[in-house]
Image 1 (spheres, rainbow, N blue to C red):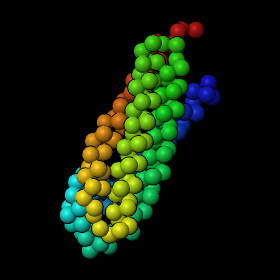
Image 2: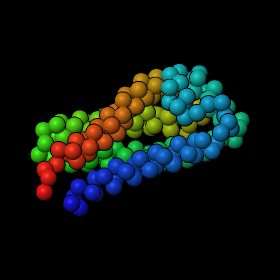
Image 3: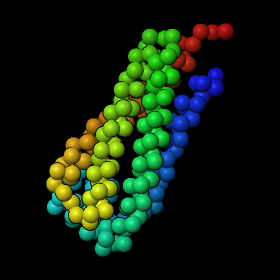
Length: 171
């Protein structure tokens, strides 16, 4: 039983960190017309420069850098938590739960790679105070892949847990 709960604690911890990011984003309100999501999707050095200039003008540069550092922690906790949760589901005796677990494991790997790639490239551009076209384009390409992988890990883990609960043999 402890073996089953441990992966979920890590996965839930990742979701908790994500929830904190959402709340902090809401509390920041209209401090800038641009969000981290805009920076991720910018696609060009020119747009990255526009966003970063706005953040500097509004005194947000350091806060954004700290937010990106915190994002590295989130990626590790949620990505690894999803991988371990998927592996736990994959070890189930139920075929459907095993399939869902396999999808979650694969999506967790894709999430880790795409989100780290995107965030590292964003972080470098922030520290340079300058956008770089290939970095902006690569980060913008990684963003939808990261989101798709996140949704698969999130919904796949929930579906696997529900399926395992519903199909559990009655004692």
